[in-house]
Amino acid sequence: MARGNDWMDSGSCVVLRPDLPWTGEWFDATLGQLAAMSRTCHTCPVQLDCAERADRLRVTAGFWAGRYHDPNALDLVRIHDRRARAAVELGGAA
Ligand code: SF4
View 1: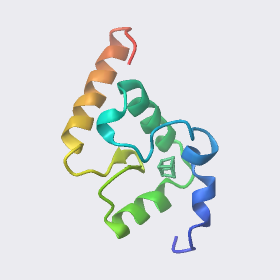
View 2 (view 1 turned 120 degrees about the horizontal axis):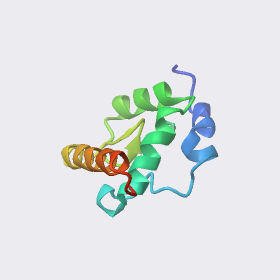
View 3 (view 1 turned 30 degrees about the vertical axis):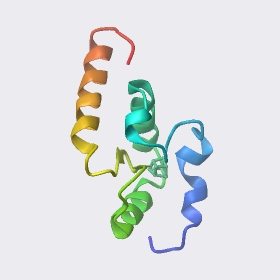
View 4 (view 1 turned 180 degrees about the vertical axis):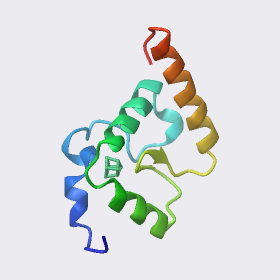
């Protein structure tokens, strides 16, 4: 790590899913979008760089390395995640 910001160009959010609301407000994202962003980060080749940058900058907004960084959003995102998993397990749409 600590190799500049070139890694950002390789982020799956940029390469694969620029259509998702990465920098939007968490409460505007649908359950399907939250699940899609979680999945995208989970397989991202630069997730460690992303997490390190988010921690270093103490970001307080946006979806970084698998979660929203709005401190007020964390519990609600976890609730969204549980609801999305339950919907998938029940055969419903997330
Ligand atoms: S971990 Fe997620 S937010 Fe970070 S660069 Fe990868 S896809 Fe983008």
